[in-house]
Image (cartoon, helix red, strand yellow):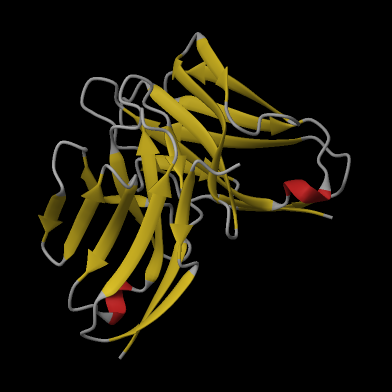
Length: 112
Length: 113
């Protein structure tokens, strides 16, 4: 069973639009929530991460929104660009264990 | 990331064969991981090692074994490959001193016929 559920599986957005990817988790012990970005032929790379003591974290065009009570977090990509086309994975971890549990991934395509 | 290398990058093998995938890192990290990636299932942890003498099973360890030959090397073996082990395999590393970011290798695409 997946402890971290990610949606949608695929997403097509026009250049300049907002891409939104959602994740929901079950384990309330999770206290670290990263997003990884993977380009074709490459391994995933950390994009941005949040801890549950804040509701939002922004880095450039990328924002994580976190809702602890709903056990949900999401990635927003503002002004989406064709170069953002990649697969995005949300993940969750318990700090003490340092083991990442990944969502199923979202393949994002940004059309020019 | 060139600091984490995996060999081979692609491998086609037959059912029942023994296969070894190798991972090396120059990052000086103490922790290493093996993941399997299947479409729609994300990355699933196979095995992980927090130091040379520490080996732990992950979510899907059945049919796999690992060896941590040195701090920089972590290999994954499929003792008797089966078709449903066809997948993309990633090695990753992290540093227990500096945080939780995991650094992934470029992956090995394994096909079992």
